[in-house]
Each structure stands twice: as structure tokens, then as C-alpha cells.
Length: 173
Ligand code: ATP
Ligand code: MG
Image (tube, rainbow, N blue to C red):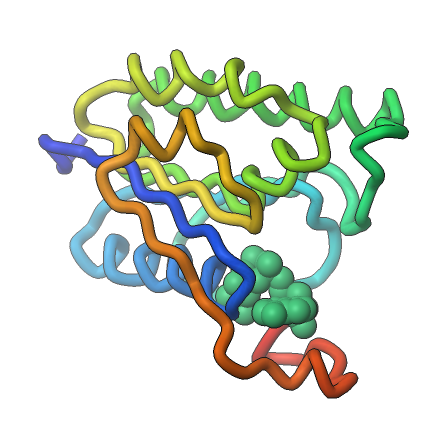
């Protein structure tokens, strides 16, 4: 592992930029020769970044579907996928094969009750020193925020989604 002093980052908030900030870090890390993997929770589909990440030599795994679920009506299969994602994240982090591990939208999986915040506490506390760990997504995982080193909230001042503009190719997806 190249990184000796890995930190924990969390991107939260309703504004644009959580996933793109994490991907920006991935790009920078690859420039320094760090090994990077992205696990996308609740995302399935051909996001434009998949092609770019492949070119950069960043591995990506998609876990679950892109949908909004009701925390009061958790679907067992969605929960299973999210749980499998946590196991995979844990295996990857402790394997020490990657210098940077990005858990994209994992905060949303917590918000939707597919994952309990408690399940991730040990992961954050016990992660190998060399791993830089990045969590993104709307939500407020208070216990994880306490354990993180960098916590950044994206605050929307304006977002065209409010005026009905759908996600655009190459910009949001
Ligand atoms: P990006 O991937 O552009 O960095 P993000 O990771 O910060 O965005 P997410 O919470 O993952 O944002 O969701 C982005 C999706 O939600 C987009 O398709 C966007 O159109 C939609 N959306 C709805 N409202 C907002 C808002 N206030 N801010 C950002 N995205 C929004
Ligand atoms: Mg995102």
C-alpha cells in the first residue's frame, strides 16, 4: 500500500457534488499511482463515469438498484444486496489490496434502513491504516460522522432539478 496515513471522508447534503467529489479523489489518487475501487450502492446502470473509471484503471462494483425505497417497507432482496455490499466492502478494505475505497451512496442505504449504521462502525474503527475510505450520499450517519476525518456537506443554493430539469448525460449521469 502506498498510502501510509489513510483517512475517512464523508460527503453528505442535498446539493450537487457528493459523488463527483469522490470521483475527483479517485482521479487524483490514480495520478499518484494509488489503487482505487468504487462500490456503488443503490446504483445500477451505465453511468458515464463507468467508462472513465475503466480508462483510469479504477475498479467498480454495482450493488443494488437505483430506486427509492421506503424505510418502513424494506424489501428483503434489497436489504440482502446492501448487506452483501457491506460484506464485500469489509473484505476489500481488510484485504489491503486497495489504497482508496469509495462507498458511493452508502449513506442512502443507511437512510433507507437497508444497512444499520452500527454495522459500519467497526469497519471505520478497524480499517487498515493505509486505506483511504470515502462514503457518500444524502443522509446523516451521525455515528460515522464522529469517526470521520473529513466531513463535507454539499449545500444546495440552486439546483435545476427544482425547476423540473432531469438528470443530464455526462453531468449527472
Ligand atoms: P453528483 O453525482 O452530480 O455529484 P450527488 O452525488 O451530490 O450528485 P445524489 O444525491 O447522488 O447527488 O443524487 C443526484 C441525483 O439526484 C441527480 O440525478 C439529480 O438530478 C437529483 N437531484 C434532485 N435534487 C437534487 C439536489 N437538490 N441536488 C443534487 N441533485 C439532486
Ligand atoms: Mg451521489
